Amino acid sequence: MFDKLLKELKNLDVMKISIPIETDENGFSDRECPDQDCMFLFKVNEEDWTNNFKDEAVFCPMCGYESTSDTFWTTEQVNNAENQAGEFLEGKIHKAMKDDAKDFNRKQPKGGFISMSMNVKGHSPQKLIMPIPSMDIFEQKIQCEKCQSRYSVIGSGFFCPCCGHNSVEQTFSNTINKIEGAINNISTIRTALNDISKDQAEDTCQTLIEKCLLDCVVAFQRYCDVMYSKNESSKPKVPFNAFQKLDVGNELWREILNEGYTDWLTEIEFKRLNILFQRRHLLQHTEGIVDEKYITKSNDTKYKVGQRIIVKEADAIELVNYIKTLTNKIRNRNE
Ligand SMILES: [Zn+2]
Ligand SMILES: [Zn+2]
Image (cartoon, rainbow, N blue to C red; front, side, top):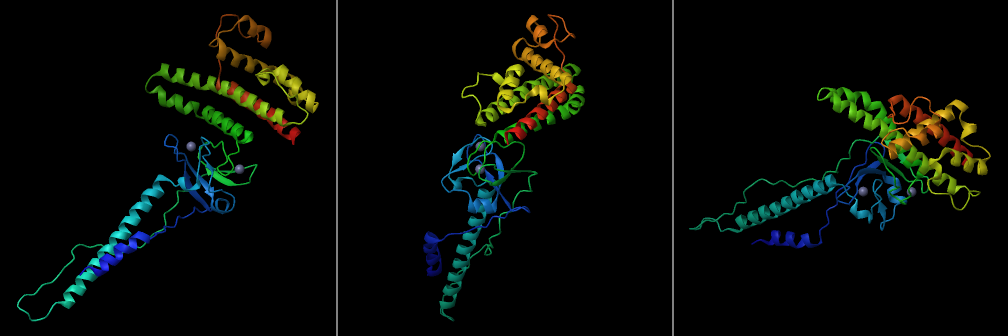
C-alpha cells in the first residue's frame, strides 16, 4: 500500500543533497572560525580556496585556530542548509504519500457496498534547493605575503587562513589602524559620554589616548624585533626589549643598514620622539608621575619631579607619524 513511501525512505539512506553556496561580487565566500570562543567571520577568495587551501588544515585569521576545511562553514550557512534539506525531504515524503494515496484510491473497486478512499492532508510542495546567499563584501582585502592567498576580514586579521603565516606587516598595520581609529573617535566618544558624566568622559578619553602611546611603542618594538632578526647581517641575539630604547635601537640599525633613526628624522623630531617614548615609560611604570630618571633621559623641561604628565590626541598622532616614518624606512632598507 505504501510502496512509493517505502521506496522514498529507502532512497534517503543513500541520498545526498548538495546545496550551492554563493560567493559575493568579488568572488569571496563566507567562512567562520569553528572555535566556539572565537567564531570570527571572514571571507576567502573562492578560486584560492579551491587551488591553494588544504583539506587537512585551515586557520582562523583572528585567533590562528587550526582545523580541517569542512569545519569552517558559517553558522548562517549550516542553519540555512539544515532548513532547506529538511523542507526538501518533507516535500519528497509528502509527495510519495500522496502518490500512494492516489494509487490506493485508483485500485478501489467501484460501485461496491463499502467505498474507501485515502486522502493525504496538508500542503508540502516539492521544495527547490536555493543557493545560500553570501554576506555583503568586506572592505579589507588581504593577500598573504607567503602563499599569495586572498582573504577578507572586518577589523583585524593576523593569520593567513591558508598557510597560517603570521605577517609582521599585517599585524603592525592592524595595530596602527586601530590606534588611528581610536584617536579619530576620541571627540565622538567624549561628546557621547558628556551627556552621562563629564568626569567619566574625561577619564575614559584620557585612558584611551594614553593607551595609544603604550600600543604604539609595543607595535614598533615588535616590528623592529622581527624585521631586525630577518636581516642576514643582524646579531644572533638582541637584548630583551632593545627596541624600546631608542638609542640602543638606533645603534642596532646603524650597524646593519649604515643608517638609523637620527638619519630618518630631524633632530627636533628625534627629540620629540624620545620625549614621547619616555612619557610612555612613565605611564607604564609610575602611573605617569614624573621622576628624576625621566627628566635626565628626556630633557623635557615642561615638568618637574612629582608632576603628572598630560597626553593629548595631538601627542598620540605625532607618535604614530614618527613610527610610520621609521617603519617605512626600515621596510625599504630591508627590501
Ligand atoms: Zn578564531
Ligand atoms: Zn598564506
